[in-house]
Amino acid sequence: MQNQLDMFKVFRNPEHIKALAKLINLEAPKKIKVMEVCGGHTHTIMKYGLPQILKNSFEFVHGPGCPVCVMPKNRIDHAYILANQKDVILVTLGDMIKVPGSHGSLADARSKGADVRFVYSPMDVLKIAAQNPTKKVIFFAIGFETTTPMSAALIKHVIEKKLSNVLFHINHVTVPEAMEALLVNGSLIDAFIGPSHVSVITGSKIYDKFPKEYKKPVVVAGFEPVDVMEGLLMIARQVKEGRSELENQYTRSVTFEGNIVAQKLIDTYFEKRDGFIWRGLGNIPKSALKLKDEFSSYDAEVVYKDALPNDLVDDHKSCICGEILRGLAKPTDCKVFGTACKPSSPIGSCMVSSEGACAAYYKYGNLL
Ligand code: SF4
Image: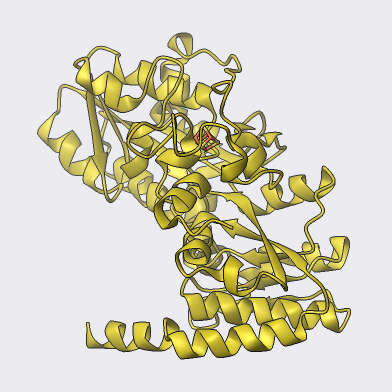
């Protein structure tokens, strides 16, 4: 605990942040358009007012790295439909329960009698399954590379223990394919701040192609404000010196190779899939995971195939979450931001999720 407090003193030190701001503003050769891929970084950036103190050196473009935000409506509809199947308990993580689908949110399903539960750790599913042996417990798995190993660990346990009442609806997605889709579609981003937690698992190697093939600097940075500022200084120096390199500010947790044990666990149970339609970014080839065919008896998408439609479902007509996730708009560009759409009555996923850009703008309110 004391170590953590000491760490906060260092990584949230206002004097340190101000000194870094001075350096960045001196060194940035132009206003650099930087995308922070991860929603956790968006919240740090907004919470500590970085757009204000760096207004001459950086324009922040918020990226697609919020797993709840990028979940398309038709997958939420799957969760809603599964929750309403006979003798099913639908289990998911945190904010997912509040995101509206076309029939309503999982919270709505629960208020109408469906058994929907949220857990902090996927392993909590085991307890629910043990307490309800006559029910099917379906884990609606979400998240980027950060949470995928936890789903894989749960699957491993379920298979090894031959548990017959646990199924999975897999919605894990991958970061590099989304970043590449943005660039291929003409995004004018100058550089990226690479996600921290994802990179702990994958290693920074997954971003190697962006400096090499697209000439875009990538700096992996931690979540604390000093981490982000140091990452921005590294980007400013790359741009000033005409370099495009992969650099790692978050060396206390991220290596080039990442967590090999976690990567092997993922590879044992999952394979890449096509046809996952991201909210805002559309169909990005090989950007999502599915259970390997040999584990299909645990796959709720296979077991309940006839009940689950695959139609595309449009977002609410007022919601511009898709444009925000593509870095083409800011939450304040949305006509219903802060009026019809608030955290207490969200219209779109970017306001629901604690990592969403709209939620960050609403919560910290330090709007430009
Ligand atoms: S403010 Fe609400 S409706 Fe507007 S883009 Fe954000 S989530 Fe969508």
